[in-house]
Image (cartoon, rainbow, N blue to C red; front, side, top):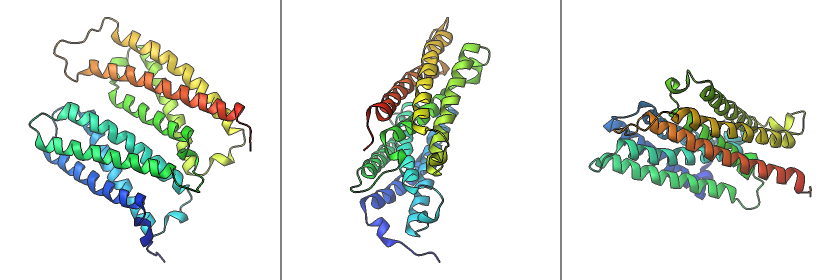
Amino acid sequence: MVTLNTQSLTVPVGIIRLFEFVLTLITFSLVASVGHNGSASFWAWCMFTWCFCCFMTLLIIIMELTSLNPKLPISWDDFTTAFAMLSTLMLLAASVIYPTIFVCSSCSIGIAATVISCVCFCLYAAEVGLTRAKPGEISGFLSTVPGLLKVLEAFVACIIFICLDSVSYSHKPGLQWCVAVYSICFIVALLIIILTIGRLLARCPFPLDKCMTGYNVLAILMYITAMVIWPIYSFDNNQRPQNCKHCPWDSLVVVSCMTCINLIVYIVDAVYSVRLVFFVSPA
């Protein structure tokens, strides 16, 4: 029998989630009502962001109101923390991409949607802060710095993927290697997140912390090659077109920047992992 947990919405996180659901729904509705004239991939990313955040937030609210979340075979705290962190990053990207590409100075509905999307970003960021600041509770892996970095690594890879154009790299082996680097690292980061939420990491028959440290070092080396190879192959004899406004050339620049950002994230992740594994003695 399903019982309602009315106390779940009296806490700050529950109230924040109610506002998140309402505002993401309003943002999605406003943007859908005006359509778009621009890059289909960026439009799809923004619409997916608002729809995904709205639906998943509603699902979390329902699960906690009906007290069904403890019955799920997953780590609920890790799941909600990962979702809040991912939503924060996705909304940050959408709140920048949408006005940059699709909103003009006289687009009142687009401006309103942008403002509400920024408020949604602040709400999800506040949820992440409150989740990590729970007094007297032991957070799951995805609530720790390495866990949040894994979510960030996966998110940056998603931004890279929506900027990729198969025509630009299909005939260049160097760029194909870079795409392979992005894909492999994204799959591993996503796998770690899924295994964490499914409470399966503890069942691994090998020292997980050392393996993840080794993987982070390998990912750094792979991203270093991508950081060097991508701009060399992408911009060799490829000047920016004079009338370029959010053209494919700009996407190549975004991929280059995101590659550098993800390299920095992997370096921070590796340094933090090495510190925990080799320099922090167990209590």
